[in-house]
Amino acid sequence: MSDTRTVKKIINCKPLNKRSHGRPKNRWEDNNTQDICQIMVKNWIICVQDRGKWKEVVEKAESFNYEVQGPEEEEEDKEGEEEEEDKTKKNKKKNKKKLMMMIMMKKKKKKEKEEEKEAEKEKTKKKKRKKKLKDKKTKKKKR
Image 1 (cartoon, rainbow, N blue to C red):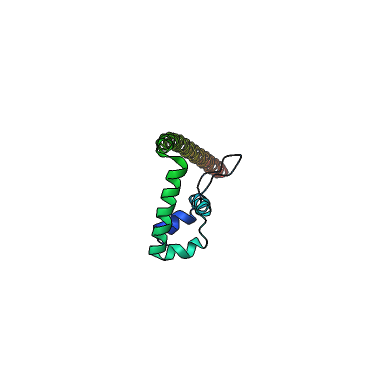
Image 2: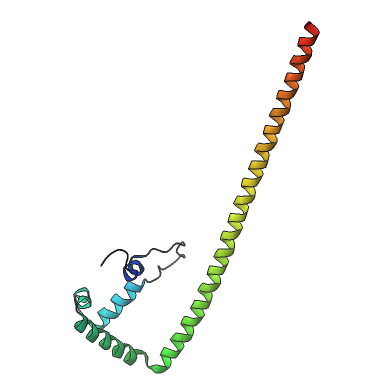
């Protein structure tokens, strides 16, 4: 599988944000391996490469999952997933706001520094002008 494929990117991706404290969050692959272990499939990586075998494994997993949870619990899980999605969307919005604030603060500081540099340049120019005027006056006096 080439590195540019979307599936490979998803499996090998690393999150941008820091992890929360406590137990580490399960990755997609961790959940799948756990499910596969419950079904008692050995060498699942080899099964994935053969479409026929993998289809059988998926069907077995779907029936196993349905037997374990039942239809009522699946609906509750969907509601829970929607709540989690809402929370993640809110967190993303908060993170965006924080990033925007940080960017704005950086721009403001950069602008302030530039203004300070310009003010210093103006001061040095004034000093040079004064010095030139003094030099001219001293030359005139000497003459």
